[in-house]
Amino acid sequence: MKQSHLFTKTKKEAPTDEVSKNAEFLVRGGYIHKEMAGVYSYLPLGLRVLKKIENIIREEMNQVGGQEIFMSTLQPKENWEKTGRWNDLDVLYKVTDASGRESALGPTHEEIVVPILKNYISSYKDLPAAVYQIQNKFRMELRPRSGILRGREFMMKDMYSFHTSEDDFEKFYEKMKDVYKTIFTRTGIGHITYLTFASGGTFSKYSHEFQTLAPTGEDTIYVDEASNVALNKEVLTDEVLAQLHLKKEKLVEKRAIEVGNIFDLKTKYSKPFDLSFTDQKGAKHVVLMGCYGIGLGRLMGAVVEALADEKGIIWPDSIAPFAVHLLALGEEAEIAKEADKIYETLIKHGIEVLFDDRAEVSAGEKFADSDLLGIPQRAVVSSRSLKEGGIEIKKRTEEKGKIITLEELIKTCLKDSTN
Ligand code: ATP
Ligand code: MG
Image 1 (cartoon, helix red, strand yellow):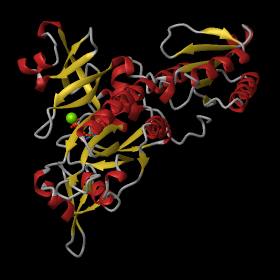
Image 2: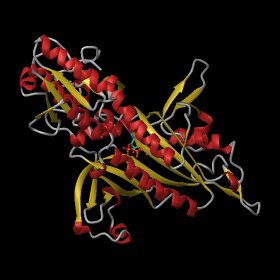
Image 3: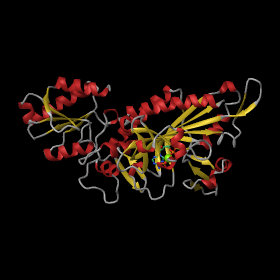
Image 4: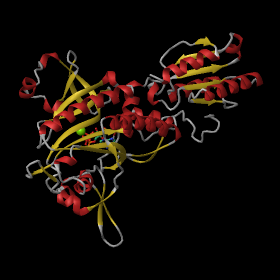
């Protein structure tokens, strides 16, 4: 894509109404646009990142046997009354139409997914099952100040699994732990994301969070660096430490962002809707459930919070909006022509490239924009680079670049995109 065609522009100044790093850089870069507190639109660059995250998550959900669906956002009040959450869930958005009918805007989808599955599950032969969706959620979060980390409207992947026995559930739950690890590794935060024990609420002993280390994180976790396991602060009791065979003095306190979590729901939502099955002997049992969430915007914001430097964003290769940021510097016709040729050649090789072809923009501005946008590779074409025989390539994370040929540039980009 040519930058001169991109309708969004970068901004030099930080927005005055944002306090978080992710919102500052993403708004300045033209990735997102704020509509109101906790509500953002995704612009071309931001949507490219979000889609890459989405695709990685989808591949992994399919891999574990999940079947993708897309459930309604507008949800019947009766379903929410049945589980008691119409009155109990303080973040629930309630809407009233002209006839006075009340509905909920989905903050999560247990109240929808269970009645759907009830239509199709009656026997042990229908189980296990796992369904998921990638969809917007609505939650009345109080004073959201963390940019896309905590939205009132935000994108989530939510999977729900259905089982005949604890044993079957446990096996699937363990598989999901591994799948989540793979997702965070593939999105470039595996090395700073910890499986974290958290309190399970009333219906199970633990839940597990996936916490990404970031100095600005909302949560405090305690990491056991030897075993790579962490605990959320709220579960840090002597009893829990003993159960997990962890020693308090070995734990290191860190700030982190919860990018995902997985829960044992037992029969909490299947019971109110009487989602049940008959076993081999014809006896009836309530279906056991698990649920598994990942916030896509939360993950994207966490990457910015965790990896950015003072100049801007640093995207991992796998979720970057483009693989390479090609900069044409100088007004000479020869440079424009050469840069154009490189651009066309990269595209022909299937390499995703953002081409800063803007005339009358100084080299300094182009460099600053490139650092802000955070595309993994920067390729500069200038009279100097041409004189030295090629293109100056530099990783976003490197201080100094080096001159390489177009063939070498293609090889580098193709190698990175297969990681
Ligand atoms: P939190 O503890 O951060 O309030 P939660 O425990 O309520 O979140 P779930 O309801 O289990 O989260 O949602 C699953 C995932 O969705 C979370 O792990 C997080 O990544 C994401 N998420 C939750 N709330 C938000 C939000 N307001 N904005 C963006 N992402 C969110
Ligand atoms: Mg949580």
